[in-house]
View (cartoon, rainbow, N blue to C red):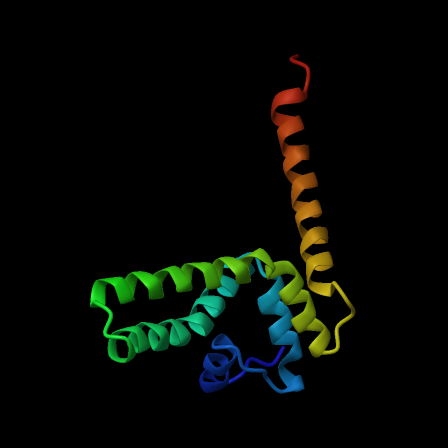
Length: 134
């Protein structure tokens, strides 16, 4: 897996697309256990500039009071991130198809990994609590 340089990782984090040679790294980012936290951070960084522009436009363009403009901008930020997170699985799977992976590859991989983890947890639970005494 080739890790992209810091500048390209920052570009990816704000919504940019990486060259195909980093496809394994992108797949790893989309399937690691903290994938959703990174997705939220990525969505936040993508919505934040628009939120700032809207807040400034309300203050400078319409003469809105600053607290009201900040409240409106914050609401836009919350709604934007909420909408992005609502479609996190589908969005991530679609991004993987752009890098040449089959449809639903990331979600399938995450589901298989969690199934293995669940089986292991169930086995340990049964060993600890379901074995007959003696």
